[in-house]
Image (cartoon, rainbow over all chains, first blue to last red):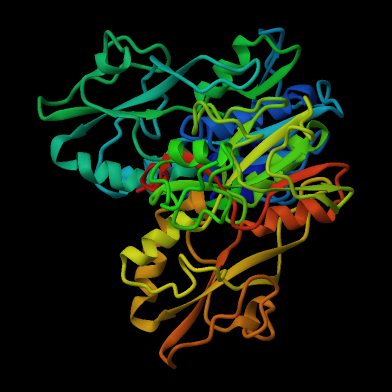
Length: 266
Length: 266
């Protein structure tokens, strides 16, 4: 088998290589400017409540596409795809416990599974980079720092819990631009949740993220900015301990055929 | 009983007067700058498919709030409200046939009914008016002209059909402003669907709207603009002939506590 050494440049190319087992690595930097999505797969009996949870919390849970029970092709955003094979690495949870981390879902797939593709931060990170805002972790093995806040999501049935945010340092003279650039993309978390004092949203120590790696402040003119994070729906769903839930493995996103600009509202 | 002669100025005031039977008339001009909503009530077994239909067609079907089965208070946007009494006039359809047009839902309410509040055009019309774009029908007994187009919505289960649009004449030098002003409000239909030649979206005669009243072109420098219309989800739902469906009577909207600006994304 040939292992791919250069990064695929389109959604179709990325999914094909992943399906063939030739690109099993984090997808940051893959298919630049194509929309990548978080994956959450749940049994049908939880689907309405979860979709409504996403509708009530559009910043942490922006829905890119929903595949009805048993459907495996993301026909609207990624024709020809197969959700059982086109993510590099999956995580399978039973009653909230990780039981498997397979490269395909062939042995886990069921006719009653509903697939949710949720926007991820890559699209607005491209907008930040394009506006001269540096993201030191971007394209590296490191991950953005993420924090559990004291901001409660709006519950829906069995789904409720605190919002998780990602944190970025932004030079004071770029803060307005960072708000503007990310506001264009409500489909991928959109405008920030908070600017400034971390304690105001329940973060006691900015050097101790709950997920990802710490990002040291570069200079005293940098301001902490916080955006709603796609870890929120996964963490909220998991804490309800669903009988079965399948997600992507961190960093191994589903690459769609949409371009970032397709999701811009202005 | 005292009949109200001046218009209520807030959502709370409007709902209270309507609940007391003292304001049974179209709500255009009521509680200026408060968000008003289209109403669609369906049995729970259709709720996931309908919510997904709205998610797939956000321009014609922007969801303002969903009340779970049996819930009668729009707790997120209108605390203290009661969906069974706070709309002036309802329409009750059984298997797609209008069977009643009551002032309350007391005799029709069921524990399995899910309520959808969907954005209406009033919010972006305020933005058009604020930008000097004249809407001759606004605040009158007349209604905006609406057309069934040849643009297919994206189906979800039993729900599918053509998109309905509203039509407005806009002076050529205000077209760009009209796009900008309405793009801020994706939660109430947002940016236009089409600008210019009506035939391009399947409208053969601009003087013969499918719903509402014709709006005569004022001068030759006016350009036809078209926005997705909230009649779409009602018409699509109705054509699936649900066992029971309840809507507002045309013009009699549900007035929320949200302000238009609460729905602006930028």
